Image (cartoon, rainbow, N blue to C red):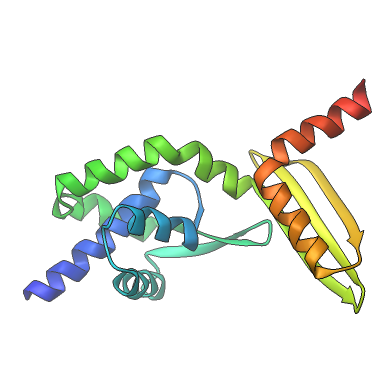
Length: 174
């Protein structure tokens, strides 16, 4: 195997390692953030490796509340188990530290849903959800008159869903 092939294989193993270490499905954006924020790969190499892993069925897409998320397949985990020693220890340490520090935020991102659908020229349906362990805690649908309002509500939900959920529950219970 030539040097370039070894580098590509090592990069793919690193992606499998991240997905395995997360121990939960994550979005492609979350995976990209982990890799790019730690300067582990450039964007184009990451996309190439990711696509090849998906094509060879070492990772797979799972749908979770309208979000495309990814996990290792059994073959991916077996491959990682056999070749994990080809991932540099320093890289493993960087990944482990990042995941340990950011797991809660990554999990939170995966469990907050905010999207909207255009119904007509002046009608948008905003769908807001909070999940916990795949259990829907709240599922709120709002009818608004503009995409600007819909986007604002989605952004606010993404940034403050815990606070908003608590306020709703307090209002309903107390």
